[in-house]
Each structure stands twice: as C-alpha cells, then as structure tokens.
Image (spheres, rainbow, N blue to C red):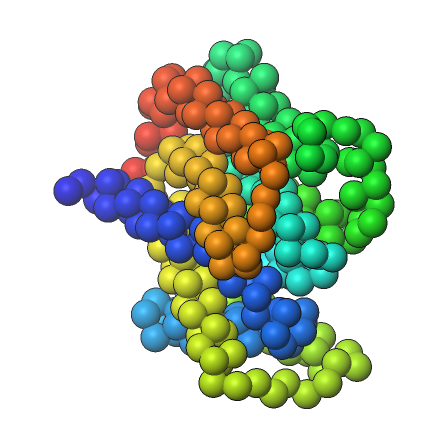
Length: 307
C-alpha cells in the first residue's frame, strides 16, 4: 500500500473513533462535572498519546506550528468539551456536535482559499447545504422555524457560540498544520497542554473535588482512549494524507456520531433532526464530487507528498 494511502487510512480510522466523542464527553461531564470531567478525559487521552505516539523534543518543532498550532488546538478542545458539557439537555448536546462538524466544510473552504484552487462555483451552494443542514437540526421539529431557532440559541448562547467557534478554529488548525508542521507531530504536547489548562480551570473554580465509582472511571478511560487514539490517527492523516479527501469524508461523522449519541445517551431524535444530519452529509458528498478534480491534482498532490 502506498504511504499516501496508509496515512489517509489512518485519518479514516480517526473518523470512526471521533464518532463516539460527543456521547462519551457528554456522559463523563454529566458524571464528574463540566471542567473536571473534561480534564479527566484529556488526561487519559494525553497518557495514551505519550505511550503510543511519544513525546518528541520541543526544540524539533517549527516554532510557528508549536505556538500557534498549540494555542489553536487547546482553544478548540475547550470549545468542544465545554459546549457539550454546558448544553441544557442531551439533545442540545447532540446539536452542539452537529454544529462542531461544520469544520470539515470550513476546512475545504479555507483550503481552496489558501491554495487558490480553481473550483466550480457549484462548490459554494454545496457547502451551504451543509450549513443549512445544521440550521435544520436546530430549527425545530417541523424543519426550520426561525422562532424556535432563535429561542433555542437564546436559551444557551454560550454553548452555541463555543460550538461554532470551535468549528472555525479547528478548520484553521488543520490547514495551518499542513502548511507549517514540516512533518512533525505535536499532538501529545497539545493534549498535555489541554489537560493542564483544564486542571488549572478546575482548581480555580468552586467545583467540588472529583469522586467517582469504578464504572465512572471506566467511562473516563474509554472516552480518553477513543479521543487520544482518534487524534493520534488524524494528525497522521492531515500531515501526510489527502487533506481534502479526509475533510470531505469527515462529513459522514455527523451520521455516525448522531447515531451513537442517540443510543449511548438514550435520546430520541426527531425526523427533522435526522433530515438536517442527512443534509450535512449530502453537502459533503457534493463538495467531494466538485473538488475531486482538479483540486486533487498537481498542487494538492505535491503538497501532500512534500510532507
């Protein structure tokens, strides 16, 4: 198997693991609290990465990637975990996950802008379908109801802002990593930084001390292992795999994630919610079809091989 395909396959494995993140993060933070639960998950994830990826010397990393990429990574993880933890209900937490999954769409969009690739103008309506799908999931039981949409966001604006901001930040991170990492993998240090940031936030908060049963500890371990494994594989994918393909394929995460979340969180979702998720997927398929040529040719291919 060509090296390119191996790394792209690693990114596909990350997509499968990531599909469980929304449900696992929400469940653990319900058990241990928003900040403490998230800190525990990222600690386990960091330990997994220390064991399986290692801790390369910080001096070996390009400074721009280490500093800017690290900050973007930590801020994204805070946005993701806290948007899920602070959601008013489990259904709203799943909505946060769908909003977060706008990042593949944004990654494709930013990649096209940065590389100045020539694409069909139909790409932009295709991307808008994904955005409309998110609106459809949040807009109400009967499709888009602007009254319900505004009321839903107004009920918890912080979580919605965090989820959408996270999608933008992660899309920027993906493109920055591809351009400036020079083949280096700082994922372990970024997870350690995220865990430390969360523990500092936990220490400064008035949250009670963590205490839990063995069953809760198992949930923390599973959540951390899934997250650490997912990010480890994904970083390999975006460093040396086909970024546009992986970003487009990532549109399938909403379907898997929503399905697993509905089961693990015992949540019944409406038909309109599933319709919105399907629209996000349809947008991804259309985006892939419109960008597979010529955007995956000369310029994109040479960039992938250079890393």
